[in-house]
Image (cartoon, rainbow, N blue to C red; front, side, top):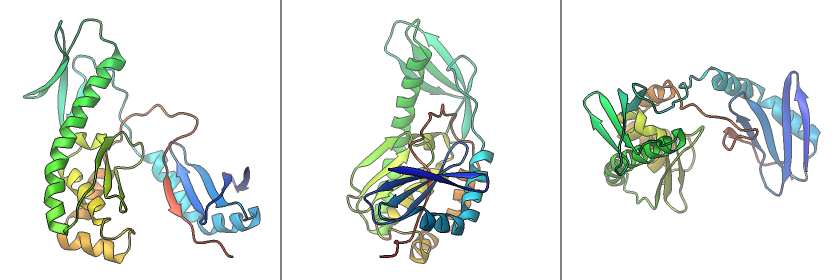
Length: 253
């Protein structure tokens, strides 16, 4: 069941579910607000909850609207593409051979068969970026496993629209945003350290910050660098799949 209410000019969508806690989300690109709530709560209770988080909602909306995004890429000659924070010009060569991507000084060389579509070129480049990230992340994960004394389960490299990484402390699995291959390598190290620290502490509390302070004193600097860089261009659909989320308190019994 769903419902809605307004906080001034802010529309809030409510979805009732069989869950225990209230979850408040602000979705890109324009800051749509959504609450997932236990089925037994009423709208008046949820309105009071949303009012208590109004400053946070406005802050997240402002960040989403101001965050820079790259222009769309068409995978043509002399387009600018990044690897580990360095810009390269793309050189496209059409020939009857297996598609490849090769890094030359100042240039990314994309070899494709004649007539290869933009979508196929994009897929070839995306696969290459995933491999670069997987290779770099593997070494960093091994290093940070030793530093923190933890064991990572599976590692997933995937497109993530609003998160740089995630961790499942129960399974030990971590997920890394494929776009990290385009950012400075310090940013990847910060995300790896951040996600592996969640294997010791689930929450972003003082213990979590102490872990990062003790083992990666520059983490806040790296985070600021990463969050200040443009995100990839996305063609947003009618319902985004990820959000900036603030978990709510347990509802009254």
